[in-house]
Length: 227
Image 1 (cartoon, one colour):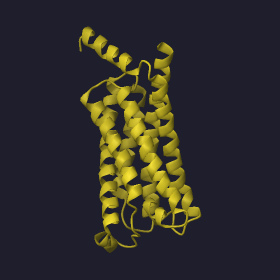
Image 2 (cartoon, helix red, strand yellow):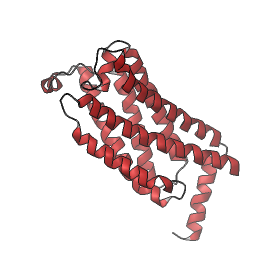
Image 3 (cartoon, one colour):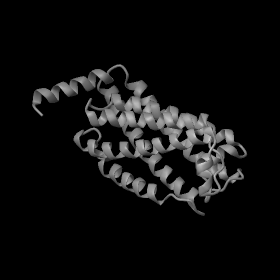
Image 4 (cartoon, helix red, strand yellow):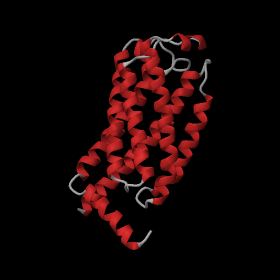
């Protein structure tokens, strides 16, 4: 890339961030907070629910005691992801990979909101998957699309981070987290530990999102000091 082009990209970045750095920083903090709350509900709610940490899906917590907590966790997690997608889009160069990455994060966020609105049904065996209600079908398809979207976002952005000095420190950890999430996505199956495997997968994905949000917060804070 020529020096003139680099200067233009940097100028566009400054223009996008100037005057909005505090908002972008707040959006990143909101994303971090909502992901922590989501993980807390996924791991701790089984202690007061009739659903099991080891063998039941996270979504099934919405059907049990204090199920409204899990529904709220899905919903606010989705809002936080939309906030992160917006902040990330503003804090990166306008390249195809970054745009696609932001869109995929947003899709994951919209999916979280949809699964909050359309709860799952109880799944006790593989046969139950083929006998879902309308709400359960929407929930399952949305969860599948969301999972594929965030895995693709992790893959694309792990590659794109290395091209931007502001995001380059995340490259190694992003790649490792993607490999872990990709591997665990195949480990999920019906069985006595399906709930635990899903929680490990969700924790890795949320860990990646929190890492990205922390970096977005740092970049926004630095832009504020410059401005």
